[in-house]
Length: 474
Image: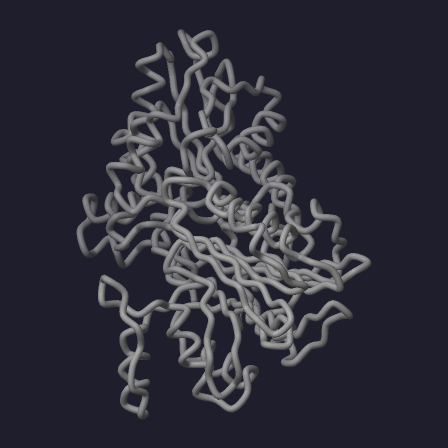
């Protein structure tokens, strides 16, 4: 994944961009960078944040940064933002998204007369440099951005800071990620997370539509390319990786999660006639907590935190590329509250069940701490397809997903033709999937939120929401 923040103002914006980018640190742990424009010059710095947080790495750079315009990013892919000099001028650029056809785009670039890209140690081309190369094939930035977005199989959301200090923001043509503009008395900012600019004293100003391209300056903003009619914003923004304080398409993340947990409990009781008799309902930290609160409130069960995630010195466990490191970090972060576990019947709500590895270890940890029963609920349906639009999951193959893997174990290749049935807990295949995963991971019971229930909790037109991870629909 990744996130960005930019600002253009009548005053120096270094601290605004510094803190604005830092507020996107939950979206990646690999690279981060900032670039500022000051009286005709650019200043840029990029650091690895794999072993230290953003603030620590960039604090010493602040004294050397100056400028009334700046952009910055948290990147979970390649180093950025980049500075580019071309026939379109000098500009800084940062991108968020996924490019599934990068090799083909590079070959097409060479076939059309392009001569080179800089190669990284892996011999791959930096994805943001590839985007800049696509943009530079056209005669204007707007034409280039639209060309790049149409050529890319995946998604592309970006910020460009030009050599006059203006910032061009472009939302993915299907609006898979949000892009918001805030304003204060001195200027404007652009952000992925709305809370980031609200904490910096900016007010809500405008939310870009899908495919919309906007030019932002201290004085205001203007639309350079209008929004399209179709939108497919990522549902996982609300379910999992969006920050609780943020709003997307007018819907707050935290309150959606409360609703989602409540709807899941409501529908489970209607379907099964009862809810498990447990001592406590809990959420798997962090994003599972509000889903758990909603479930507990709907069922009138006590909410508790039987284990606490120790976060001061540990990065987010889903980000490191090494699965063994990810598993070890997740295990080390779980600190039990024995008084809330020993001899207790517990029901946990997690935001999702992806590979199941960490959740299986969590169950072992809980039973090892003396839990009498452990019931599990997933706040979204079984994930059947790896995301090809945003790369927020480390899964490299659909068969790494526990849902797909269990389907293959149950029915072989024939089962892959019936994924819609396996995703529906009311069908025989759906019940079989639940039973098998429940047994493999050691739960006393397992239920998933339905697709309809999750979409009800989000509350916007379901046709505007991307549900590819669950139903494979483009």
